[in-house]
Length: 234
Image 1 (cartoon, rainbow, N blue to C red):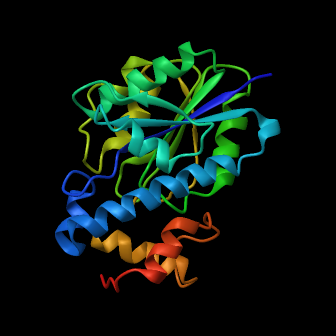
Image 2 (tube, rainbow, N blue to C red):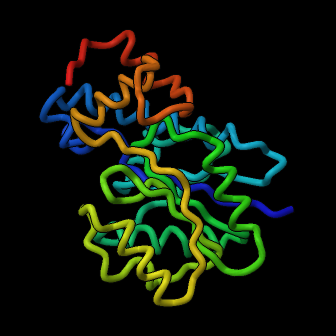
């Protein structure tokens, strides 16, 4: 049976080392706890993908030595893969190669900062990758990056000449795909929670008040934390 690898790209939550932009507004400890909630919620989205479709989740994590933290956050059946490389492009191509070499028929790499990622987007990505012919699936993010990239082969070109961390990332990635003749399937736009503004978006969505992001994942861990934790105002 075919089995898709779904890898969550993220840092192990540690105060002062994770979600540093958000930490400037809400404090390092709260930001770290939220980061852990986000990882749990993305893992829950992966587990909501029907098993009959064929999938296995992975935590693609940093830094080395944080395995125990990730094991406590992720479901027991998830694999762990240490991030390798000195920028996001190296991390992504390294993870894609490693997971495809593990005999998965396709790989999805998803951002660990999208707690309400809709499971149906993951299903659509896997179904698209199982269509005949080589292709890329891309989920564009609201900040110009992407929250998901899906591949059947590890194409190095997709991760070169990309200005990581800028609003041109998704567009540049589509340009690289066009240069090598790789068909591209685009998913709907979604968002990452990186700062106090996008945390506000999450709070609006969880309250059912968002006019932009609807029918997202339930995000049980983030929902519970924000309900019980300190009052956070954007």
